[in-house]
Image (cartoon, rainbow, N blue to C red; front, side, top):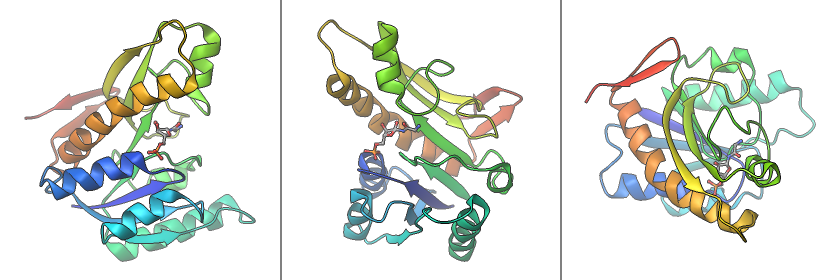
Length: 200
Ligand code: GAR
């Protein structure tokens, strides 16, 4: 199954997917294209270095519909059947999401439904949470509210700051995301209402 990965930044989660693919741990998933809305995202170089097609579709100065039409055009022409949001910092409209029903996954740096949206780690710190984590979920038309596929926690310890918590979270998501993507590509995730089950 051909996968499209949407990114906006550093691309450490993309790198985890690339490493998993190299190790033969993503099949039958295949990283077919990486698209960044940010022309200077370091993620682009990670894709290119791995021999994966990398495209920039800058969202700036475009209506949301026009931006998404360009995304869909690349994904369709590449034969992409499932989409991974790996640090993609744009909200997708229902039009896009409905093109891939239960075929878009996102990794989010909190225990959803706590701290959705932007700045999830600063939100958790400012709230005084003692626990936060990673949620990998199907993307539906709500903001970070889709059915939860995988979720694990990390502690917030005294003296922690955004950098230390982010490090702990990313370590976890680099392990979880490739596993979820492999299961998705293998058709091993089913979704009844909000409940995601794993057939393996
Ligand atoms: C990841 O930690 C991901 O959870 C977060 O952005 C980071 C991207 O890092 N996503 C969100 O906050 C989505 N709302 P990366 O570019 O190094 O993979």
